[in-house]
Image (cartoon, rainbow, N blue to C red):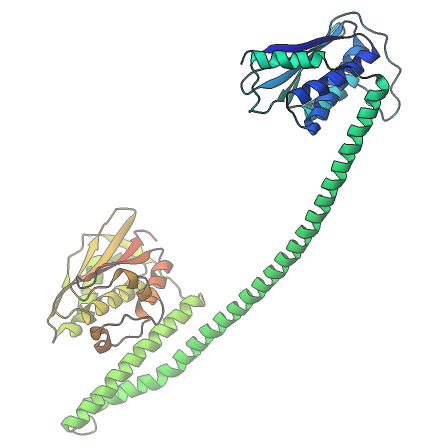
Length: 441
């Protein structure tokens, strides 16, 4: 919309300043601005107009509507002779009336710019956004101008009364907002007290959890140590019996002693896993970094796990790794891979278990993968298997008893090495358990 002038008037006397204020309020009302915005526009215009009158003769105020979105633009200018200097400011009063007037206008209007200010000229432009629904076309603006021309100007006394009413209304609104602010402050104080109490409760529960975790770790550690000695004695004695060191055994006796030996071995495995978990949670596991020859690592694993495949229909295959030197803790890697492989052998009835190095990126990362052709794991159970004491319901699971601690232990050991473990599987289609490690830990 092109700019259209609504009103132009001179500012040559004190009553003119009052008239400019009245006209500014009337124009704001005709442009459908709210009561508060009407007072803001009137106050800003009158402050700058009073400053212009006090500085120079030939002052004038021009009211224009235009732009998209529509705006009310008020220009106060003066370019006549300089008026006599005002009385010196009293202590505590502003020393520059123009600067004070401009600051007031900037707070009350959307925009206020001093285009020129010198001993012989003054040009100030103020803008106020109008409601977007205003149909500010040329015809409507002409009607507004006609309405304005037909609206009388009040005398100075009436204007003072109007200003008093505006001030009283502003004070009432200020008190209402102050009451709202006090209510909000009280509400915030109550909320803060609640938050402080909640934090105290959370800290208390966190402290209790920390102590409970410490007690659990101590219990696991102490219990594991206490169980190791009798278990070692049981295993040693059963081995002596099976080796016929105290004389021959009947077939039934040999079978019963074998059961004892196997049960002691399973319990010893559980104790070892519990002790390792307790050490990790207590932060007492030490990582020893050294170069790891992968071909020697695979060879040691092959010899260690060969007894598990003697009477099995499952083939254990180690794919020769490339000549890679990994800097890590060999014992922890062996423990993780041994767990992966023994699990794969437990849950594979036919086929093979393959151990290979994959995704090797020199200087970055590598992946150990243990792939089987076993029962597989459904998608909803793939996170469950990494939780402590969690096992999947399956007929083969009941035959291949376990502790439910091996995979959670593997995950924590991998994290200590700066890596992670993952599984890729589908029910009935086998699984691939992977250990991802940085090449240089």
